[in-house]
Image (cartoon, rainbow, N blue to C red):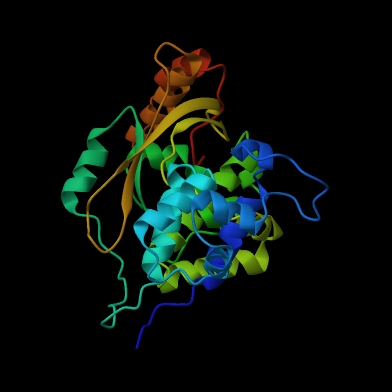
Length: 315
């Protein structure tokens, strides 16, 4: 018996939405007359992909099991999917294959000590490890200082670990922490959608998506778009409650801890010679100083260079 959940709805919604986003002109077809619905017609996609309309209609209804990679490639090219979307389509097809044996339930993987040593060695960069559900499972001191609003949030789990999705969608204070909350929310939902394509039988992930869908209309709207993100990096603007405004670059790196669960090492840094680097260094000095033993003169001096960032995190 195949224990995997039925993902036909995900396949259908993804293909329908991507087809609706294309115009005839974008694929080299004449615009023709007025259309009842936006986007390409099924028969147009079928012709461009080199398959019959009946066959593509069946595919769009979620019957993807057994479809060859060549045909999926043709559909992906026709729908002009980007690399992440193409990977997601192939993940959906792989998940739809019947499983010959009962799959073992995914279990949380403990971060090895060597990874924590690596994190702790990064004293001027905020670094942390997340799993595919966006739980922050390991951090260095600067990451804990930088993301102190997340650690103080009511959305942390029983072990006190933050989850980015819960924080962005279930904590109203997250809108004050992120300069562009909408972008953070979009990316978060898209990352979870890609993870759901890779691991549709992840019970913890399904429970997380169910919780967010039930409580947050903002999440429900984004989840329904079927946007996916797998590889992402860039610049993030944060409003830290103690250090002030921060412009930081971030770069996720795949971290092969376990074959059964995906992890990423994420590193936040500031451009050298900028006030943002001064503020990040200020956070680093606070993070490295034991509670109650802060050097006031050093802190005051650093605070002045960091445009008067107020008090110490947690104070």
